[in-house]
Image (cartoon, rainbow over all chains, first blue to last red; front, top):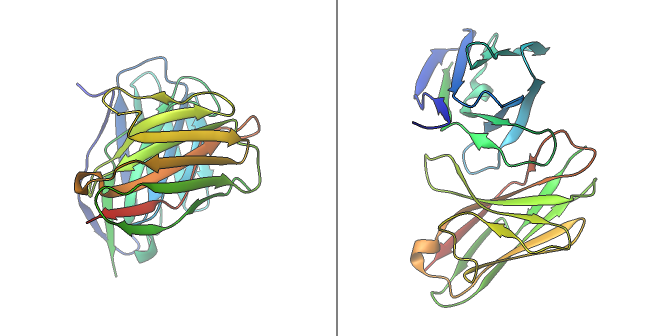
Length: 112
Length: 115
């Protein structure tokens, strides 16, 4: 069993829809949770960074962490075609420049 | 803030030659840099971790004599693919982090094609 599980998709939704992306993990020591967005042939871009449980909102994006269930989510409101990308969840035990454990990535397409 | 650059963005080389890829942190001091490899439609595979001034730590299965990593300063790390072969063709991505960064920030990647 992988340490971090993420449905690879592909996921296709119409423009304007609310998108929900999820990851589950098995290591209860993870404290720091990140979502990266990766466009085709580009490096990953940090979208959201959260510590421990709770919600964090940034514009159209909301990151949610439920440590009791070992489950994290990324919600995208009012989705746009420009949101079409692969979304990677990542997590670490210690803050800072530490080794990250990544999910497989979910390929998302927003249809105009 | 937290901008990481890579050079070149793409490179084509002949089998048997060596290729050097540079990774630079532009606006912060990167105490740690990471090198990843990514195959199409797959997630990132960590190759090695390097701390400034120290030898790199390679992940299991990564040949350290083939993938030479140097992290000589707080803003520059290099990955040299020695005696490249077609199976080394891939997308190589670096990331960097420092004392003032909460996590890693990634470069734009380098696409390597070995003929």
